[in-house]
Image 1 (cartoon, rainbow, N blue to C red):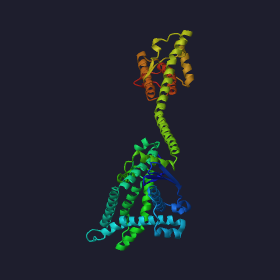
Image 2: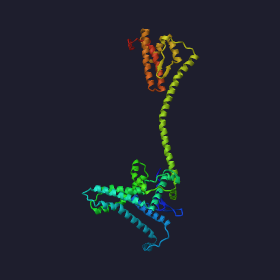
Image 3: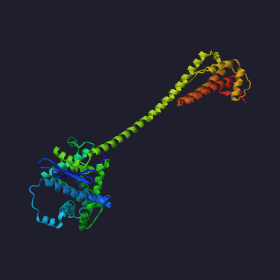
Image 4: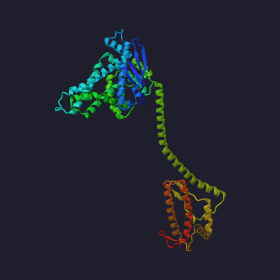
Length: 486
């Protein structure tokens, strides 16, 4: 299903969900009640479109997410503070100096200190360790690879250490509830406790995968950007942190909306790492995550819209499959109809001949002048009509008249000659007729249509008349004539 675009974060005893410019944080208070605070967070990208270009938007989104995350952690912690302590001197000075903006300044300082510590621990510390190794021992490339490996080891060790803390362990459980709830909605299910429980606690858009991509990309990046001076290497590591964050953001964003095999393969390390940063939540934690997502996202409209789209795709695929299956069926149907028309026409001739015989008696044709029935491959023998038989019977009594009619019909002239012996004439006649029948049968066997077969039948009737005339005036011998017409 299409990505919902929901982002989230685990906080102290709660979950924060964000959808575009709206966010909501749901927290389980000490008395068991779920408190939900909603708000809006407009992005600076909306006011300055130039910041929306790739990579740059990743840097801006990373900073804004970091600021919002720290703010949500602070607001969730407020539900569990005991007696309110008196503000310190530094806090009093800030409030006196900046007034209402004091809280924003404190938040900015907190974020800045967090980023500085992260860069120092995960970027500069590995470089400082490998810088003591002389390049005469190992090359620059191997030192860079060792630096990247050390960076990943420090990161994993940090996660393992903080996961032993009780409060952080519960944060990781809420982190799992956040992922499960988003996965439930994006897989087309209603976000109930039963449905959410069955979903995965791993998600490709997770911040854990983002941090891992930053470290892996940094190895490739620093292999290409080679700096010989040690102090310049530290400067490069600091300056290129925003670029690495922007690139990683684009990868995570693309991976969250893609199901290609390559993207799924590249996302595997981040999903494995989420096995450390997420834990299986209990039902109360799932209810908190559901309350948070319902405050900022209309999941019913999302499910209805995407279900309709998927049904349309399935219907379109089904129609295409049916059309592809019907194509050969249409050809078979057409072939069957052609055969049926042919068979009906062949069966119609004997019926018409029988009806004509019953209506008007016909003089029998002498046996010696009768034409042998013709046969075709896969079809019944062709029967002569009553009219043709009647004409032959009349012409047999008057050969001269028959000759004149044939000559006038075909515009031929025949020399007078002696009629050949009966045996030779019959043999030559049978041989010629067999040749004609073989050609017609061959054409019919190779898929001739009913109209074409009917045309061959009419031609054969004319050929019969011609052959009969030739039998009387030509002598055939070894397929050659002794007398030929002029």
